[in-house]
Image 1: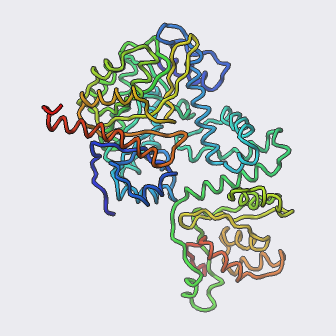
Image 2 (image 1 turned 180 degrees about the horizontal axis):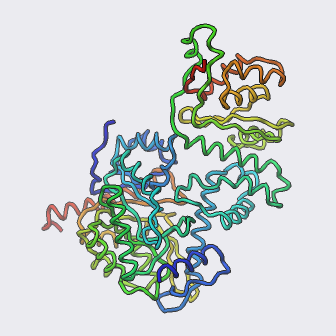
Image 3 (image 1 turned 135 degrees about the vertical axis):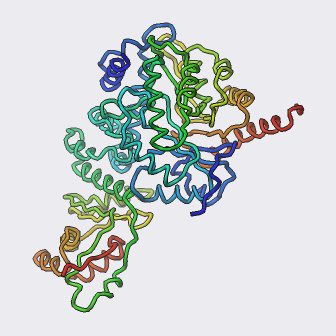
Length: 255
Length: 290
């Protein structure tokens, strides 16, 4: 019996047009829509707030009312699959891309992807980074055979829009200043959280291709020729910069 | 790791919020303990765990679950029980509490504490779930009375009798949320003081206090909403003071989850609760002093 009532209750929560469960009432025995709507509202507001926590820059870009409206539509279609709300909203970027209202802000879904990557990095497992000097322990000539192990928080993003610059502008008190000076090109990014702070770094195309090749398991020796066609090379510079971000936690010798 | 005392003292604690981490670790305020929502610490690592570990070194911590759906008809989510077990093992909270409510249905999580009817059928179900939680986590749990906005015509138990029976059958403790008592009693035209007087006080291991919002239902009747977004109101403080005369001094939590204030305002709410607990303790120790 509770099984059937709970099913009706859940259906009425999901769909405002659904009838209220038969067995519920106020104390006078009458069904009260306003009372049931407290539950509907709690569900909607709680999930919209959870999305707002994960996507503050998306919210700032479109304004509170517009954000609430897309978030409400998203929460109606996609309820969380578990009570762990820090995992909720992964598909929000894809959802934004399908909404006609967001057409005037075509970069919005990629900014959402960056915020999701930030959220993943924030909650990723902990691991202590190593420095580039640790590579020096290897016998001369063997470094090319090394494969690097990346921090569990590391993620890569590639966008046709300057998403990192947009995101970084919103970390300032007055984003408008920086938003007026956005680069007129897309950006590639590395997201990593070596200790307590999530870092989002813009990578130039060469650095991106090189680091991504390393991330995909290529050795230092294999990764270098892969990017030779991409542009002028300063691989040792890129490698040093990569270690400085704290993205590398170990290496293995693949000889 | 060195740990603060593992018992939760009979004094005020507050709900731990990320925006207060620095105030707490920087100022080491004189507060009895902290309570955390378990689900906020179910990521693999990162700042939440780093901050909670530091805070756990300095204070007792209570773990409060908001997602087990104990009142739901479906089996409990074993993955979620496992996630709770990881937290219990890692942080060794003295108290673990959950709600007499449901929140999940067919793999969808509604993120709210939803009401269930009080019948023989649901009593068996809830008791089986409480047994399962206690054996999975290998600890006694506290079950919290809900704030409700509707009643079920099918209910055959009064809420106090229902909770008493759950505690009797499973050996679980109860978390008495005094604000929820106030909210539900106003919403359903019941006497809050009578609810407290009939409550099985020996089972109570913790008290919750919070602020609530007020609205009107379709018929113009008072409709209080358990919003946790403002200070505790005077009638709830009075009901709390009355509660302590029945239960004796107990660990008391200030919950403030929305429109979260600056640390000093939350801390001040804790101090108000502390003053009432202290008065109760003094009365217990010196029963003849007025």
